[in-house]
Image 1 (cartoon, chains in turn green, purple):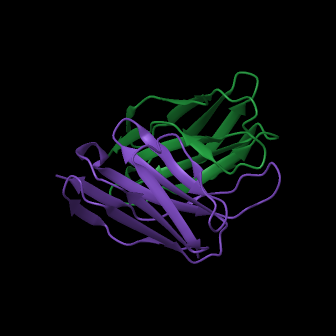
Image 2: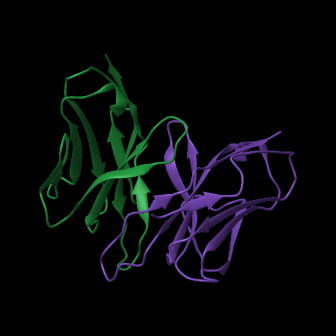
Length: 114
Length: 116
């Protein structure tokens, strides 16, 4: 069945450093790739997404890249801050056509140390 | 501002009880979803609904059922709760965007269910 693998499961960085989280997906028909951030005790919230007709998207300190040929996409956070500490989930849309389902990765716990 | 609410933040039930988890969204979204979240397993889809009275199984539907009698409300039912259903349950909703287009899902705050 469809699958999304996410790595690493935990990531610790020093404040100011960059963080990269990688995901691979199995369904070649997937065309929507969101990233959600879940702070401790809170609900997941969308932070950035990318569609399959775009290779890269940036929003201030965060960016997502997509390689459709290799079926992987990555989240890049630059100049990390303590408030970036959270669990991050990647996801990919699932065919068949007209389905609004997402399949999620297993999450990455990011810790940013001051 | 999209608002998705869930009936309880914390719930403790006994093995064998019938459990109802309620989710309400106020943005007239067509799609609603139920996930369970477990450490190391991410978010796994239990059931989803794309219209009133319509439902489809997700990846882990066993032991669960759902009900959607009104567009804004989506209920998850544990027919006979078991200890392996102890988990965080998250509801989400999204608008129906069109052919081949998937929209952002908006999540509720979650219900932490403990079955003893």
